[in-house]
Length: 90
Image 1 (cartoon, rainbow, N blue to C red):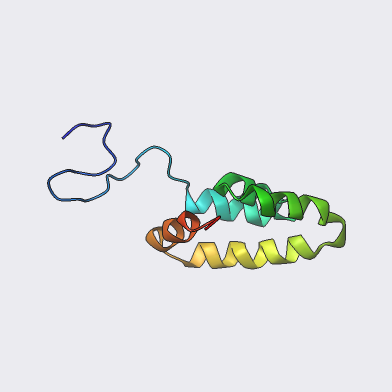
Image 2 (cartoon, one colour):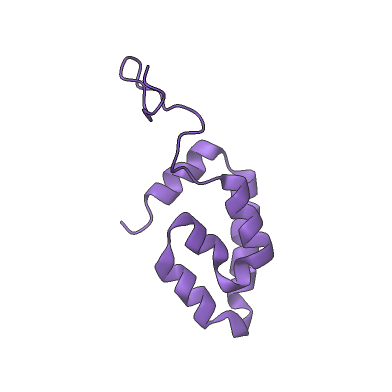
């Protein structure tokens, strides 16, 4: 199998650690510590929401939402996380 391939052509399984995948733990840590300014949203590729978080950061509402997202992301599986972030912008 070609080491640069994301998916095995024989069995269809995605290789672990393939490039381009965002880390669930990293996103959750960004949400926990820098979520009030939307860093976690920029990290996962949701730029529109990241900008909204930045615009409304003075209200502390994005920080509360980011805390909830951090808890949610820490508790979900990697597969579910990657499925969720694939649907961003659809």
